[in-house]
Image (tube, rainbow over all chains, first blue to last red; front, side):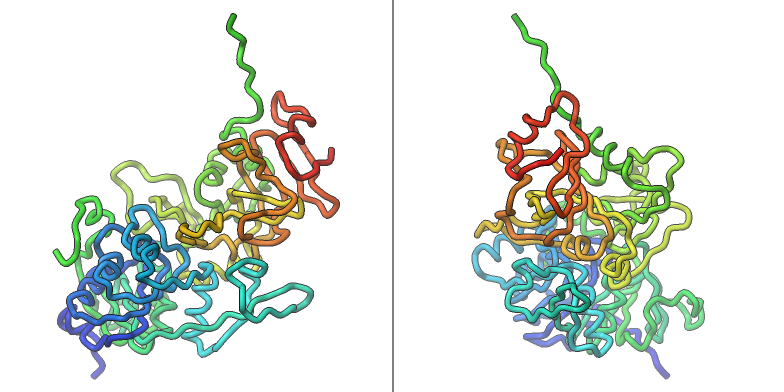
Length: 237
Length: 217
């Protein structure tokens, strides 16, 4: 019998190793798997490369993971957001590496990684500093830059509904990077607001097919990052 | 004796109105963060525009009523929004398939600098201590059919923003179609920058004086 449900957040993240590349879903707080990130902080893995659109805010979630000096490199499109102070401080102190990627290129690099495409050409960033040192090529009179797909050891993703096979649905704009990150990681770890019986999700509306998912854990009342930040909380509590 | 103050140029809302007038009925539109977002408030009656926000929503509606915000229903500026009837959600790779694949008709962006060739710089001053952040701007200018720029004509300290060459790192080369400032509406053409409309109490000489690049009438 296939059952990808695990019993605790700690169990969900137990195999994450030092030096791992981890994709973390979310656009700002929407879709950010805060409880899984906090479990990863408790678990202790370090020297991580994190692929995520932003760098978290306040002193919780991804920002807290960075603040604990567990991330050696961020691959992201927008590392400064309202209330994000941790990353800028460490970056200016030279304590964390940044690979800045245009948002659409980031999405496509993850999609390509998951789809078995090693590299692709995109027009985004041509003639800008972000294309420097990269192979460029002209197709039909337009210049494109070669970008490589990204694969990860793990992805941490937040979803709405999951079943024991790992079929997932999402909520509103919390979907963002979740579906593609599930495809691009060797091990995808998903926190679901609710785990339902197999068959309870109409096959027509499954967004992430279960084949892309390895572990699911129910977090029925996930915290809102903005509320934790407003309360000036720091993780570990 | 107190001199009566003469207002020169358009207000921000009038600038947003100018942009809105140039977006045809039925367009799929992506609005950048900040002043571009104001454009949605001035769409002429009888036109239906569909707003795409790159974090995964087509059919973005108005700001929610206080107390009805959903922290997981936000726009690219990470502010709470609503959906219109007929809206849909999608993941990031699909979102940028819309953008990079040329399916979005119009994108309205802010600018730090614009060159006479339509080069746009709007993501970084290139300063050594600045944290670089690019978001979706480079994908938008590379893929959206029409790029309209809304910006103050000059910087806060009075320096020109419309230049012969951008000194800041580019977002994209030769991508801007038209520039909507407080002083004028300017179209970028192969032969140069053409002034389509002057703001209230702005004459051509005044405009040229506040612009580094040569303007044509």
